[in-house]
Amino acid sequence: MERVRRIVFDCFGCFPGRLERIIGKVLGCCVRIQGVLGRGSYNLVLDTLLVDKARRPHGRRGADPRGKPAPPLRDTGEPSYLAVLPVADGVRLWELWEDSRSTVAWRKRVLSDLAAVTLQLYRHPLEGIGDMALASDGSPCVGVLRDGAVAIAMARGMDVGDRLSPGPYSTWKEYAWNQIQGLLLLYGDSPLYGRSIRANAEIILEWLEDFQPDFPEKFFLCHPEFGSGQVLVDPGSGHVESIVDWDCAKTVTVHWLARGFFLPFFHYREKPDEEEEEELLRFFREELRLGGAPELVPYVTKYPEEVYPQVMFEEHIRPREVSAECADTSLWVFCTEMQAQGFMDDEMVIQKVEAPWKKSKSPTTSSAEETGEDDEEKSGEDDEEDEEESGE
Image (cartoon, rainbow, N blue to C red; front, side, top):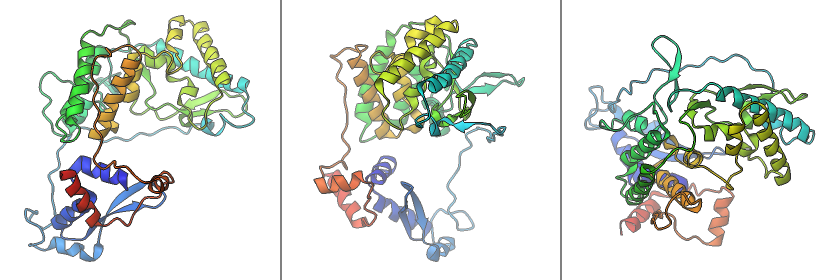
């Protein structure tokens, strides 16, 4: 329930009980937020016995001529999306990687094919950072970064001005600058998190002013959410049959590409064996070197021993997945890690806001939450009390 309270408060500035009453008055029916059993998600449920009230002329002020709620919808200009994929052979690597029959030699065959994928993408650099798109003549090109902060702000109807751009970006510095400025536009005025978001964003922007790339500004296509669930392999040989889910793929710097297909970095099912992971890491690096790209080897690093700012930025700054609270946390974590790695001055003061609903809890309450037992019987009166406390 705390997750719902956090999201509702962040988006609407009130607690769930008040939001239910507001929506109920608008629609003229009873409304409640109800958890979906076993799914960890929530639905907004309308009481069907009272829905007809919303159709009466006096049911809602400002309704359309038919008496039904008609909020304005803005055209984002994005075309409809439909993907048709051929049937792919193989078994998901998720089911095989930690199987008792999966030997180190078998895993090396998998990594050998993934290293070959890395080399193929490295041999075809692209211009700029952005999503893959189609040019007017039908040829593939780098286009707008739709998951970027500026594009999200534009889709929400915000005025981004002349300085901000949704992409593509000709340099990584331009890309990072636009993401931070976009986050400021999206969440910088948040009543609760705005102050720390602005302060930490200013630290990053100041650092970007002096940033100099350590590798020629080339960009490469990379998988948007690579993991063992996206890799299909032959169970016997260990050879990769295909890698699926390439929609929303974008271009990245060499730092992310070099480590982007080293599977142990993206397989969190169980804690890996450290000795085996080191052996597989050495093997993957050697495959890249023998494949004719020794310059990639230094960038295949084991986190957090040696990490580059470009990698940390990709790991933490993800505008599509954030709210104001998440943006605040992401900026704080990025700045903290940058200081720990020596990329930022230790004298810079990083700020972090503690949400008002994160109160100290008894051990009994904490243990119940850790087991996933949410209190679904919270009444609207509890929400009102929380509102009064947060107002104080």
